[in-house]
Length: 249
Image (cartoon, rainbow, N blue to C red; front, side, top):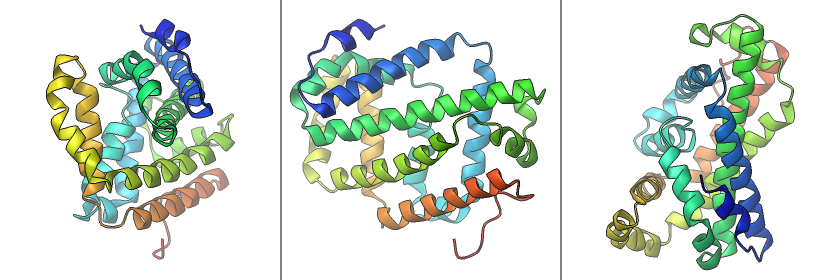
C-alpha cells in the first residue's frame, strides 16, 4: 500500500538505507504471503513454535520478572497475524522516521523489521516443506517438526534469527532505561490517535512497559540464546528429544 512512499523517500545514512531496504523487502513479502495458498498453515506453524518456545523457556516465562517481556516477544515481535495495520503504519511514517530519528534508533527499528521478516520467511518455508512431506501443520509433533527443520534450505538464517534476538533485545533494553522515552510515549497517545497510529503507538508502549519491568535483560537474552542454539544443534543432529535441555541451561 505504501511501497511507493518507501522507495521515494530520500535516505541520507547507512542506517536509514538499511531500514528502507528491509521495509521494502518486508512489504513485498507480506504481499506474497497474503496471497500464498499455505497462508493458514504458516499461522499454525507459528502458533506451534510459540507454544514450543513457552515450554522450552517455561521457567523464564513463569518468572514474574521476565513474563511480560517474553509475552511481548512472542505476541508482538513474533506475530505473523493481526499486525497488518501496525506494519502499514510503519511504512506510512517512514519518511518522518528517517527525518527525525537518530541512526542508532533507526538501526534498532531495522533489527526489529529484519527479525520479523526472517521469522515469517522461515515459517513459510517450514509450511512448504510440511506440505511436500504430506504432514498437516495442525498435526505437528517434535519428530515431524525436526524432520521438516532438517530439510531447510537456509540453516545460516536460523543462526541469524537467534543473533537478531540478542541484538534487538539488548538495544531495546538500552532505550527503555531512558525515562524520556516513557514520558514521550505517555504524551503522544492523543496525537497518535489523531494520526490513526494507535496500533503502532500501542505496540511501542507495550514494548517499553515489558522491557522496563524486566529485572536483568542481559541474563534473559543469554539464556534464550544459549538454549535456542542447543535446540538448533539437537534438531540438526536428529536428537530424539530435541527440546529437552541440560539443567545447566
